[in-house]
Length: 272
Ligand SMILES: Nc1ncnc2c1ncn2[C@@H]1O[C@H](COP(=O)(O)OP(=O)(O)OP(=O)(O)O)[C@@H](O)[C@H]1O
Image (tube, rainbow, N blue to C red; front, side):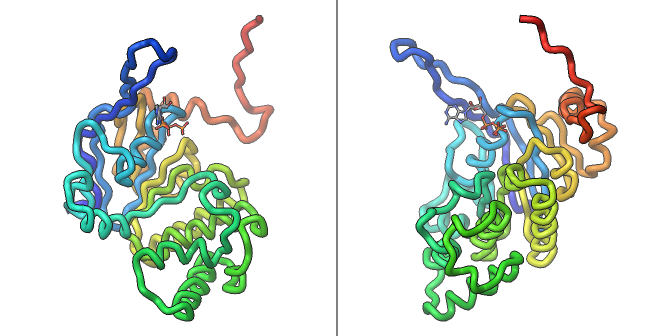
């Protein structure tokens, strides 16, 4: 049995431009099916607006899809009782792109990482501080850092705090929604190394949502492309991705800028 199974999920949003107009629904996900095994990292690629974050929210149990099922550890997240959903939710964590808005600026690192522990575990203060100190060291920070506020960390360090919070309950699956996209190249590589290390130490599974092919390639075991709300391609072997003739992949590859500006093929801007 797969750890996560998304079965034929479709979702749309109601939208109207003017308040007197009837609301029309825009389809964002259309018959999406995919699965993630224990210990696997699935890279989910797609251009902006493809529906990646919506799918992430559907998997997290935050956005009930109009059609289809999300089975986590074999249980339908949207068709189970509250206590089962709460139990499943501890095994399903998330790290978002914006490390600053993901935390309360008035809370110390200790309080931020301590939140899930307080929700799910009943540890003494001393025991909780010991666990938080270990988590900080596990993500490459110092245990003394627990007394600092978010403003006292760099973006990369703060994202490590978010990762420490995500792994605090030893989850089975972490949704990484553009989790390294706002970091500079060096910090990005360091955080990707950390995520790889945590994955092999704890047997974690990831859904790595990104538009960044290089980052997806560096961390993922398998790759999928979401295009216009549909899974356009799924590569069990990621090396097949670069040679794929799939039009969605070609579009994604074609949009990658060369690292050196002189080698970038920029189309001429239309005259105004
Ligand atoms: N709450 C919402 N209400 C209405 N429309 C929404 C809502 N959330 C997302 N959308 C629309 O759904 C489409 C898909 O959005 P989504 O954020 O899932 O795409 P994405 O692939 O994650 O894009 P990006 O990489 O730019 O974040 C977009 O057209 C977006 O405007």
